[in-house]
Image 1: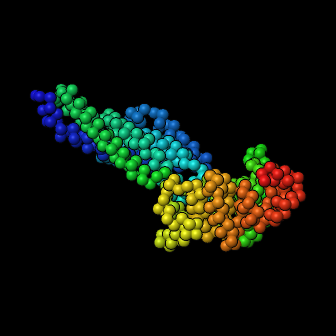
Image 2 (image 1 turned 90 degrees about the vertical axis):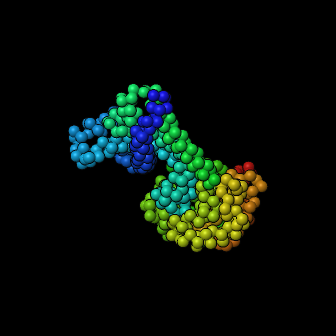
Image 3 (image 1 turned 180 degrees about the horizontal axis):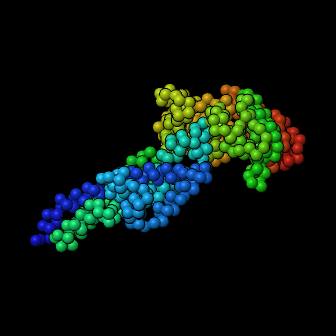
Length: 224
Length: 240
């Protein structure tokens, strides 16, 4: 069979994998951003206990290989918590998403914290001086300004997240990488299939880059 | 309106204010002068709770300043503050900078808040800059917007922390003019400044601070023409 013929024949399988890759990426990006925001606010809190919780979270989940975290949630945790029964029959996708969320969330915590800290103290003082509460100050004054500065490192992390979903193949989630492996196991066309898989990943990631370029331009209009 | 009794403030071992007592009456314009490090900025930051007291008491319109969040917010609604570095919200345009306090803190409708913002922009002569963002404005314009932002809360007292110190010389006049206009409307004001012309012309009372103490206070004519204290004389001879 010719080079492109093999790819063409396996496209349905590969696109199915790409679809799952997109789903897991999107779910992880949204959940990890929420988790990151919560723990960033914990780390910046005046409350010492909250600060310690935030620090502990980042230390642990940034400090372990992602693949260990995936195995831990999937194989080890069910030994002490019957997660597999609670989430049956969706335990595999849930475990994969939780592991990714916790790992990416730790990095995003630090990105959001750095963004918030980069806004000058004077902005907070001005907001407090017109009677805003700390929560209003964060919501209406600090976060909107910090978010703009967070876009480049966040996009970095989102790209990393998309690539990290390939590790879900180790718990038999049929995302793009695993679909590629499955196709190769019957066609033996490593060169063609890995080339196709690589091209699809690149297409996904380059589209995200384009979106982020648009976002940065859009927020540029609103100045600093 | 403002009553400070035996106020002391230390940052760690560094004592910045030593047992200061001062009263500001309704409608009075008090100008605080003194060298850098004399504690004057710390003093007015205490009045709206941006710094915490080490000892003593400050009351604003009868309410004592505490660390209680509700009390602090109540006082800050009544006390407007203008900063040396303007501190306009960079992501909001002029109109939004002025309207956000009334909308989020006083609960005004957007239309009402914008109407008030336009009135205040007329007052500081910047209606045509309503849609401009802070970094499209000159320093003097930014500071006038900052004054309008503080006034939008209908404060009982306005605090000015060296409002012209970060400005290019040619822009000082427009900001001082806006402040003079405010003084004429009988606003209670506490102004920390190095502008002695303003102190002399607009101040009802001048307070000279040095080393964390109020060394001398009185009507501008007295302080500038016949300072009694040696330290006041030294300071004035250096800057006048």
